[in-house]
Image 1 (tube, rainbow, N blue to C red):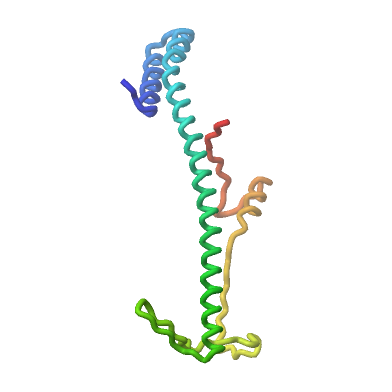
Image 2 (image 1 turned 45 degrees about the vertical axis):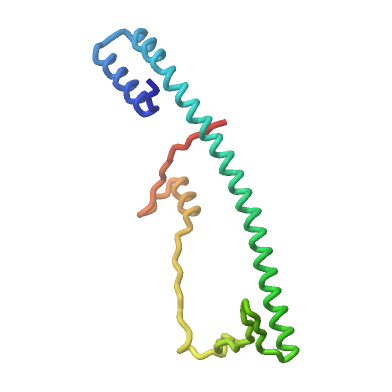
Length: 164
């Protein structure tokens, strides 16, 4: 029967606890646990191999996304250029509408928009003060590493998996 890794780990820990509770000699405990760990190591190797495979696939997808993003940006730029090209030529010729059975092209006036020529000349009634407060975490980390006690902050060391 093919057991999941978490079940193998649970069984291993239960076996280790039972052996310690029975007060068996250290050599017997070590030999028994070494034999039981083989299946866990094989399962761990298989999971690590899958992780490496998924990392490779992730890199391939990321590269494809980047290529598609570059292509999309190129198409968007061409689209914008074509819109401006058509608009400028219609304006230059004084043509405001072109009709066909598929679509109608019209030169339309946009709604008015505010253009700020000199922001300093704008009255204060139209201005808003924005305050952005952010914590410089890298400086907090350095201070904590230097032994400084900072209220509301502490160092925490996580664990990560390394597969080489």
